[in-house]
Length: 210
Image (tube, rainbow, N blue to C red):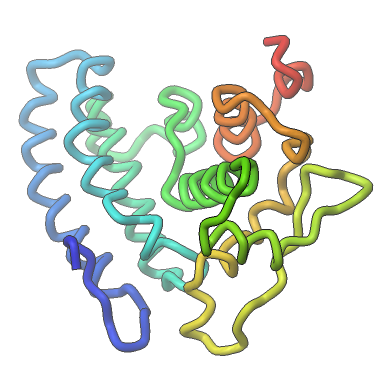
Protein backbone atom coordinates (compact mmCIF):
# COMPACT_ATOMS: atom_id res chain seq x y z
CA UNK A 1 0.00 0.00 0.00
CA UNK A 2 1.63 3.25 -1.24
CA UNK A 3 4.99 1.46 -1.37
CA UNK A 4 4.87 0.01 2.17
CA UNK A 5 4.70 -3.76 2.63
CA UNK A 6 2.21 -4.95 5.25
CA UNK A 7 2.44 -8.44 6.74
CA UNK A 8 -0.29 -10.25 8.67
CA UNK A 9 1.52 -9.79 12.01
CA UNK A 10 2.90 -6.29 11.27
CA UNK A 11 6.48 -7.42 11.86
CA UNK A 12 7.80 -5.11 9.09
CA UNK A 13 10.72 -7.42 8.23
CA UNK A 14 9.73 -7.55 4.55
CA UNK A 15 9.52 -3.77 4.40
CA UNK A 16 13.06 -3.37 5.79
CA UNK A 17 14.39 -6.04 3.43
CA UNK A 18 12.79 -4.20 0.52
CA UNK A 19 14.47 -0.93 1.57
CA UNK A 20 17.82 -2.65 2.06
CA UNK A 21 17.61 -4.11 -1.44
CA UNK A 22 16.84 -0.72 -3.01
CA UNK A 23 19.54 1.12 -1.08
CA UNK A 24 22.25 -1.37 -2.13
CA UNK A 25 21.86 -0.14 -5.70
CA UNK A 26 21.92 3.51 -4.62
CA UNK A 27 24.99 2.99 -2.40
CA UNK A 28 26.92 1.51 -5.32
CA UNK A 29 26.12 4.56 -7.44
CA UNK A 30 27.02 6.93 -4.59
CA UNK A 31 30.40 5.24 -4.20
CA UNK A 32 31.13 5.86 -7.87
CA UNK A 33 29.95 9.47 -7.63
CA UNK A 34 32.17 10.15 -4.60
CA UNK A 35 35.20 10.12 -6.93
CA UNK A 36 34.08 13.43 -8.39
CA UNK A 37 32.29 15.34 -5.59
CA UNK A 38 33.63 16.80 -2.30
CA UNK A 39 32.13 15.57 1.01
CA UNK A 40 29.78 18.55 1.42
CA UNK A 41 28.20 17.99 -1.99
CA UNK A 42 28.08 14.24 -1.45
CA UNK A 43 26.18 14.79 1.80
CA UNK A 44 23.51 16.71 -0.13
CA UNK A 45 23.23 13.93 -2.71
CA UNK A 46 22.97 11.29 0.03
CA UNK A 47 20.24 13.31 1.79
CA UNK A 48 18.12 13.68 -1.32
CA UNK A 49 18.66 10.29 -2.99
CA UNK A 50 19.25 7.83 -0.14
CA UNK A 51 17.71 9.16 3.08
CA UNK A 52 14.47 9.95 1.29
CA UNK A 53 14.34 6.30 0.24
CA UNK A 54 15.46 5.01 3.65
CA UNK A 55 12.78 6.90 5.59
CA UNK A 56 9.89 6.68 3.14
CA UNK A 57 6.76 5.79 5.11
CA UNK A 58 8.82 5.27 8.28
CA UNK A 59 6.06 6.88 10.39
CA UNK A 60 4.15 3.67 9.67
CA UNK A 61 6.72 0.87 9.88
CA UNK A 62 9.63 2.13 12.02
CA UNK A 63 8.75 1.64 15.68
CA UNK A 64 9.66 -0.30 18.82
CA UNK A 65 8.26 -3.48 17.24
CA UNK A 66 10.71 -3.32 14.34
CA UNK A 67 13.04 -6.25 15.05
CA UNK A 68 16.43 -5.34 16.54
CA UNK A 69 18.21 -7.11 13.68
CA UNK A 70 16.30 -4.93 11.21
CA UNK A 71 17.12 -1.77 13.17
CA UNK A 72 20.81 -2.72 13.00
CA UNK A 73 20.46 -3.13 9.24
CA UNK A 74 18.94 0.35 8.90
CA UNK A 75 21.73 1.81 11.06
CA UNK A 76 24.32 0.09 8.89
CA UNK A 77 22.84 1.64 5.74
CA UNK A 78 22.80 5.06 7.42
CA UNK A 79 26.49 4.96 8.37
CA UNK A 80 27.64 3.33 5.17
CA UNK A 81 26.13 6.20 3.18
CA UNK A 82 27.85 8.82 5.33
CA UNK A 83 31.17 6.96 5.13
CA UNK A 84 30.95 7.15 1.34
CA UNK A 85 30.76 10.95 1.63
CA UNK A 86 34.22 11.05 3.27
CA UNK A 87 35.58 8.12 1.21
CA UNK A 88 35.99 5.96 4.33
CA UNK A 89 35.55 2.64 2.54
CA UNK A 90 37.42 0.60 5.18
CA UNK A 91 35.36 1.77 8.19
CA UNK A 92 38.27 3.47 9.94
CA UNK A 93 36.18 6.41 11.19
CA UNK A 94 34.14 5.76 14.34
CA UNK A 95 30.39 6.24 14.33
CA UNK A 96 30.71 8.91 17.03
CA UNK A 97 33.03 10.91 14.77
CA UNK A 98 30.63 10.55 11.84
CA UNK A 99 27.76 11.74 14.05
CA UNK A 100 29.79 14.83 15.00
CA UNK A 101 30.74 15.53 11.39
CA UNK A 102 27.31 15.25 9.77
CA UNK A 103 24.86 15.76 12.66
CA UNK A 104 22.45 13.35 11.00
CA UNK A 105 19.85 11.43 12.98
CA UNK A 106 20.13 7.66 13.01
CA UNK A 107 16.91 5.80 12.07
CA UNK A 108 15.95 5.26 15.73
CA UNK A 109 16.60 8.89 16.69
CA UNK A 110 14.62 10.02 13.66
CA UNK A 111 11.75 7.74 14.71
CA UNK A 112 11.55 9.34 18.17
CA UNK A 113 11.90 12.87 16.76
CA UNK A 114 9.21 12.50 14.09
CA UNK A 115 6.73 10.75 16.42
CA UNK A 116 7.15 13.42 19.12
CA UNK A 117 6.80 16.23 16.57
CA UNK A 118 3.58 14.79 15.13
CA UNK A 119 2.05 14.15 18.55
CA UNK A 120 2.82 17.61 19.93
CA UNK A 121 1.67 19.34 16.74
CA UNK A 122 -1.65 17.51 16.99
CA UNK A 123 -2.03 18.30 20.67
CA UNK A 124 -1.44 22.02 20.07
CA UNK A 125 -4.02 22.37 17.30
CA UNK A 126 -6.76 24.82 18.27
CA UNK A 127 -10.28 23.39 18.22
CA UNK A 128 -8.78 19.99 17.51
CA UNK A 129 -11.67 17.83 16.35
CA UNK A 130 -9.67 15.16 14.54
CA UNK A 131 -10.21 11.58 15.62
CA UNK A 132 -6.51 11.05 16.37
CA UNK A 133 -6.26 14.37 18.20
CA UNK A 134 -9.15 13.48 20.52
CA UNK A 135 -7.68 10.04 21.14
CA UNK A 136 -4.30 11.56 21.99
CA UNK A 137 -5.85 13.95 24.49
CA UNK A 138 -7.66 11.10 26.23
CA UNK A 139 -4.63 8.79 26.40
CA UNK A 140 -1.82 11.20 27.32
CA UNK A 141 -1.05 12.07 30.92
CA UNK A 142 0.98 15.28 31.38
CA UNK A 143 3.49 15.28 34.23
CA UNK A 144 2.57 18.20 36.56
CA UNK A 145 6.12 18.59 37.85
CA UNK A 146 7.63 18.65 34.36
CA UNK A 147 4.91 19.86 31.94
CA UNK A 148 6.86 18.86 28.85
CA UNK A 149 6.89 15.19 29.79
CA UNK A 150 3.90 13.05 28.91
CA UNK A 151 3.03 9.44 29.70
CA UNK A 152 0.96 7.42 27.26
CA UNK A 153 -1.79 5.08 28.38
CA UNK A 154 -1.40 1.77 26.57
CA UNK A 155 -4.42 1.28 24.30
CA UNK A 156 -3.85 -2.40 23.52
CA UNK A 157 -2.32 -5.41 25.18
CA UNK A 158 -2.02 -7.27 21.90
CA UNK A 159 1.28 -7.21 20.02
CA UNK A 160 -0.37 -5.99 16.84
CA UNK A 161 -1.91 -3.09 18.78
CA UNK A 162 1.53 -1.85 19.80
CA UNK A 163 1.84 -0.48 16.25
CA UNK A 164 -0.79 2.17 16.93
CA UNK A 165 0.52 5.74 16.95
CA UNK A 166 -0.38 6.39 20.60
CA UNK A 167 1.54 3.32 21.74
CA UNK A 168 4.69 4.67 20.05
CA UNK A 169 4.91 7.81 22.15
CA UNK A 170 7.09 6.64 25.03
CA UNK A 171 9.65 9.08 23.58
CA UNK A 172 7.65 11.97 25.10
CA UNK A 173 9.09 11.03 28.48
CA UNK A 174 12.52 12.25 27.30
CA UNK A 175 11.32 15.82 26.67
CA UNK A 176 12.52 18.42 29.19
CA UNK A 177 10.99 21.63 27.84
CA UNK A 178 7.42 22.89 28.29
CA UNK A 179 5.40 22.64 25.10
CA UNK A 180 1.95 22.42 26.73
CA UNK A 181 1.29 26.16 26.80
CA UNK A 182 2.03 26.59 23.10
CA UNK A 183 5.31 27.03 21.26
CA UNK A 184 6.44 28.45 17.93
CA UNK A 185 6.61 25.61 15.34
CA UNK A 186 10.20 26.52 14.39
CA UNK A 187 11.29 26.56 18.03
CA UNK A 188 9.48 23.28 18.64
CA UNK A 189 11.44 21.65 15.82
CA UNK A 190 14.73 23.02 17.17
CA UNK A 191 14.03 21.87 20.72
CA UNK A 192 13.04 18.39 19.58
CA UNK A 193 16.21 18.09 17.50
CA UNK A 194 18.22 19.06 20.57
CA UNK A 195 16.35 16.45 22.62
CA UNK A 196 16.48 13.50 20.25
CA UNK A 197 19.21 14.19 17.67
CA UNK A 198 21.88 16.58 18.93
CA UNK A 199 23.59 16.33 22.32
CA UNK A 200 22.63 19.18 24.67
CA UNK A 201 25.78 21.22 25.11
CA UNK A 202 24.17 24.48 26.15
CA UNK A 203 21.02 24.62 28.28
CA UNK A 204 20.19 28.10 26.94
CA UNK A 205 19.34 26.54 23.59
CA UNK A 206 16.08 25.28 25.04
CA UNK A 207 14.70 28.73 25.67
CA UNK A 208 15.68 30.02 22.23
CA UNK A 209 18.67 32.14 23.23
CA UNK A 210 21.11 30.28 20.99
